[in-house]
Image 1 (cartoon, rainbow, N blue to C red):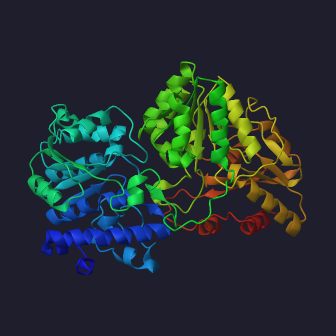
Image 2: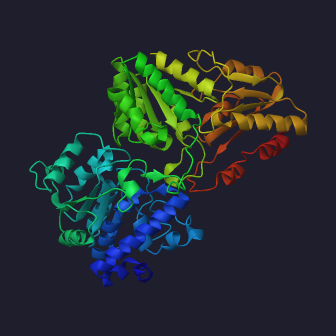
Image 3: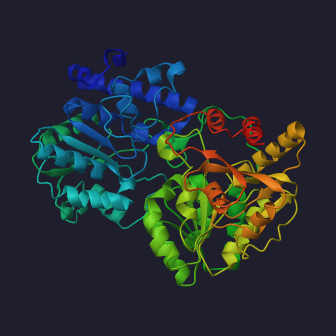
Length: 582
């Protein structure tokens, strides 16, 4: 194998073009095999193999700096920079993260996993280099889908003013996670159709020099292009036309489905999967029903339709009642707020880790204007995810903005009732934390009037100990209640708080009469979260409060059971803490 001779980028310098083509085939096989076993990003990595080889062949990394946008296309880079064991040895498949990570290698500059950031980061590197009178190339790699993010424009706008070396490689494969949306992509299409010769050129209009590579999966063409721009003394864009999923026919044909896959996706499936109702299917059924009844309904999503089960068929049925704004979360909030103000009925679906990008828009464009948006927040909770994609910070972020109502359903019926309430009201923005647990159904319609704000639900009245189990953790609260009954012979009060944005002061005051301890359980970080609101309320009383949740930290692929132990989020550890107080 050619790969046996390549451990670091310097080893590429001794290869012929034919050998590099063979190397790309070998790397492609490794990535396909590994990702099918572990799950992860398939299409983005397969499409950038040749460009990664060419970049490392021409440039002198790590002296020359590579900045990967999102970095979900860094597997080829990792194979070439001393980490190929993570792809050749199944026992080490999980040794390296799916994103760039400076703690792994000097070839990685930043730890990133959110999009549209590479040009901004690269501009900072280039400016620091110039201030220190150093000499090296700064290369930012950004996908065409990432160009729709506002930070990408801000980075380009500032980079064009550098008047020194910065090279932006635009990886154009006609795709974001799903298809691209936005006026910018008409210009990219024109540039591809004219092989980069169109007079109307987005990058040139900003002040960049420009070079187009028609076959962005051709190593020889890429090497020639990169040689032309190496050591350049002004900002330049190298626009490469690639194929997402290149070399894996099913990934080329089903680009959206193979952007990110679950383990075993490529394995033969002999039986059709049985339909299992989940919160995605419940949500989509609700949306389709409302869309037929109300032409003013519109669903908004910033480029992650697969997360919410918004299949191509679902999107096609909604037609003009669906907008994918592209990777533009800030715009999604403001756009949705204005839709609501104008009398439409917007439902915004957004991932928890990406809502972090929208704090100013949530505060100013939405909540200050009190626009009646329904915002569905997905994947909230502690997890074993990468540090870049944690879903544990949303409760402090969202629940502390005035006018917002943030709800935490615990079962299907509650969720549907909250959806109905939010959709039908016109008084305020409402966010719903879609349960990040298997769907549970009581079989009984929920008739709660959620417009009466901040009224907690008492599931079971007891004494001495009260347990508030928020959203995903109501079941843990039930387990803790049973453990306390078994081990301490105490019938604890069990409460479903429902609201993350306010307190049921009447209920909390009533607990003072016959309770000594209040326990809060939340599936997120404690700092600034729900439990602290309870502790603060009881601060001038004799009530003891124990808050259980996550620590304010960035975890990285830590097994969830290990986190639960670390944070005392098990019934046994919670019982031990209660015993110490009693």
